[in-house]
Amino acid sequence: RLLDQTAIEMAGGPVHVDEDGRTHGLFRRHCAHCHGITGDGMGPTAEFLNPYPRDYRSGIFKFKSTVRSSRPTREDLHRILKNGIPGTAMPSFRVLPEDQKEALVQYVIYLSMRGELERRLVPESLGLGELGIEGDQLFLNLSDKGGEIFTERSVYIREQLAAIGNRWLNAESAEVPAPPENWGSAESLVRGRELFFGKGACSGCHGNFGLGDGDTTFSVDQPFLDDWTKENWPEIKDKDEIKRQRPIRAAAGILEKRPLRPRNLRLGVYRGGRRPIDLYYRLRHSIEGTPMPGLKITTGDDDPTKPAAEEKLTAEDIWSILDYVRNLPFEPISQPHKQLRNLKRERL
Image 1 (cartoon, rainbow, N blue to C red):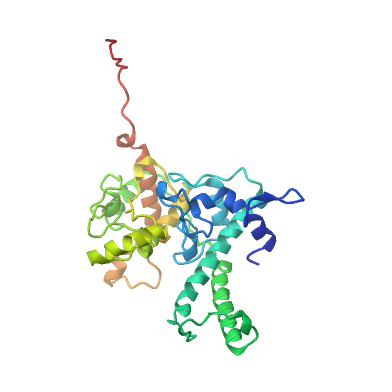
Image 2 (cartoon, rainbow, N blue to C red; image 1 turned 90 degrees about the horizontal axis):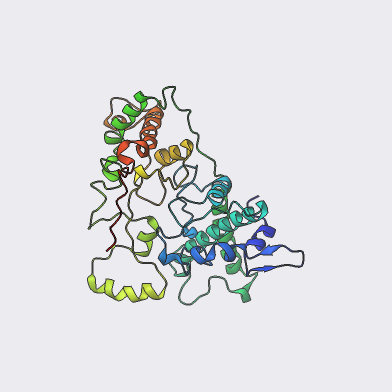
């Protein structure tokens, strides 16, 4: 129900055309130079790109319609593949035939599942898990196939893979309430501005003018880092240890640490899609893997007398913030100055 072997074979492997004229190796042809053969986000061109290409192996995806910590839907991946990601090096693959786009989507899911499974098996292989592997003992000794230990560990792997696969199978788009009747009105814009600087706390990162230069943005001690960077560059205070690890990281192809910048909202460039529903997902459910949080909303079960309830918003509040954010590129301050006259340099 999740992956089709024909699609995986079409996307994986070396680039070639079979006897029936079908193209194979789609991932290497279109994606590997940025995302890497294994989907680690460290292809040969990755270091020149900002932001870095996505590493699929942890199962974390930024732009999706599901709640935080959930996998994206297949439709989410198709949308990114079709539209690209504006403001990044990720292009649109709209011109590819539908079967090729579907094959690439399935291959990304495959790489993500494979990477996540490998991550779960690493501590087991090092003897830090529940299987009790010691010394140089192989995780799976193929010469012992059918033996008790081999069977036990095979069952463990299948259980882990089933848990990973179920997260993809159960991915569902989060429900989005309809915008209020006054959405798009001057009243909604005023309310959105109040929330942007107030309870929504958006200006702390995006700045007082929405330029992405908030007070929390330029911290030297605690720069904004995404989860992929934090994993590759864990905090180490010993300077000698940092110096020792640098050539090791370089040899492993780990990309240099690069702090994040919050989005300049006045440019009107929205990486996760510019539809109102896309922006609602970002505001409500965060951009996973980054410091961009999701906004908490009140429910019928909240006690209005408790301080935590005062920090939460309503769905209408989120729509108002969205109203204000979408209007920022059209404010006069966002528009380029008109050239009053064409001044030409005099010839010498």
